[in-house]
Image: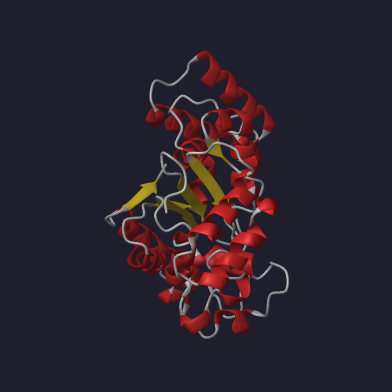
Length: 298
């Protein structure tokens, strides 16, 4: 059965770990009422995460019966009229400890994303996922709670073999026809306004309260104030112009400590960091050109 008329689109923000920390949902919720007026619903994660995981594991990709779909939908939406529902959980694809099961980066991404997709099998489904340079992702992931040591975490996986493009391919293979939007975590502050509009599917000129939220975290206060004043006095005509203005202010007023990340991993040399980073850049190039993928770049 299809849920809703018109059919509700279910949007799954897949994370991944160490790329969001709940910021996307918290930012959208600042405009929760205005979005709700547009039938774009952003439920608070505590109201659905446990239920969604339980249903994923119960049905494991088998289409849910109609009565189960209706019950889950009602629990999530609480009778709010909806045309688009945004659900987010860093653990959709795996718990952090299982990132390198089977010797691959997010090896479960294909079938676990399918488990999500078939909770509401006849409704439109979209996936959103950020990726991150393995050289900075690994040390960040190891700081999460209840994580093993480096060797037990990567399970012998060569960091030079970590490919996000393969993760995206697994999601695509298991979910044909479901659009996937991808971006680099490193670019998030610069593309944040577009990302909010893409995941919510609002009009371009929708005024999000959290448009510049992330920029504030990487810029000196005086620079951020000057940038906001400039954008208000001379509004950019296009998104490209806006990004150029922001990039210029970030370049001049960035907090260097926020842009630089120290990498301290067993056996990692500066040469290996450079090699892994270069491979990551090549991998991003591949993803940008994948059919069925929308890549958000600065």
